Image: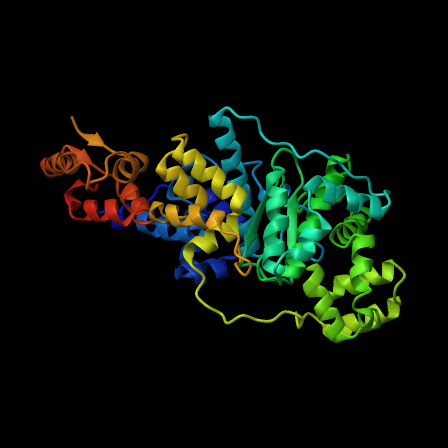
Amino acid sequence: MSRSIPALVKPSLLIWARETAGLSLAQAGERSKFDVERIAAWESGSDVPTIAQLRKLGETYKRPLAVFFLSEPPKGFSAQKEFRRLAGVVPGRESPELLLALRWAVFRREAAKEIYRVAGEALPRLGGALQPQMDAETAGRRIRQLLNVSWDAQTAWSGPYEALNSWRTAMETHGVLVFQTSKVQLEEMRATCIPDQPLPVILLNSKDAPHARIFSLLHEFAHILLHAGGHQTSRMEGSRSPEEQPLEVAANAFAAAALLPARGFLTEAARYPQAAGGENEALRLLAQRVKASPEVILRRLVVLNQTRGSLYAKKREEWGKADWYIRKSASAQVPWEVRVVSASGRGYTRLVLDAYDRRLISTSAASDYLGAKPIHFPDIRQQTFLRGSNSES
Amino acid sequence: MIYCVDTSAWLDGWVRDYPADVFPSLWDKLSEHAESGDLKCAEEVYLELSNKDDGIHGWLKDRKEAVI
């Protein structure tokens, strides 16, 4: 049938699709199993692919077949323009996995906007803003008040996953979309965000330990509030904001103060006095109690004048990147519905399923928006209502 | 008249509006139209359906003459 039909595509679209997927010619050849020379010939216009070959290229570049038949490469659309710049990632040198994760996040954000539009409902807006020169403790209090997370609730959560899910849900309730990717290397990205209203986005790396993700969540949330305060967030593409470094320092300080508010935290830390001396077991127990990593705890103890900065530096070097303080559960196959909700968040998932139930969107659109087959919708819906303490989502 | 049906219509019909176990006569009728050649599905739609629902994809697979 279509196997031998030539696809009359413009070479510029083939180049655009490959480059925006972050693939070199060699990588495109490796992933698609086409000879590099053949892809180069298609891109130069000296040969044309068949429809079947073009479809395979589309799978490699994660683009639908139809996109290759545009009259010219789309201009002005770039996920990197939206997201906060990552330290250590050279603009234009992002991995294919990161680029895909960014594109998916932008796609889901647009899907959420579309649902609000067809529903005729106002888009939620996150109230509140922060200034980088603010006192960190005040900023931390504001974040907690805004999210309505009490210290009692935090210490009562049964474990790091319930803590992560609860912080995440608190943000989603206030109109922030929180997505996760599992494909990007931690060295490249722990988290980033689209700080713009409405529907700002936080993208987390689920390769990270849950405690670390909680800090990243609050760090990105602080960036969103700083952006709302009128401060320019540096993006992955475009000019670098002169405020980049002060905003980064402020976001770290505000996140730490929000996660471990001085009064409650110091009361709790007093129950584990050896923690301030850097004893691992005391730090592990305190981490379990307050749902923060030992590294964040020790850093906070330094800021609150409970221990020395040199001890923090020494322990940090000793621990390296290992999440030694977490009891590892046996690895098991993660059910489909858990993966979907983990990636998209309860808030977004419910938004899509509710729109589907209200017949505001088609079955096909709901499937696209969730990246799931309709047959899984009932299980996915049920998963959004589970508050499992050890569940990834 | 030849009808060429898009992904959304196939999927909404099969999954949400007219499930085959509730509306068997409708799908029997559609089957007749597929056999007579006046009901069509573009290959791209057929492939898209394979990623979305095994049921409707299987139904079309059994009526491959409708896929163009």
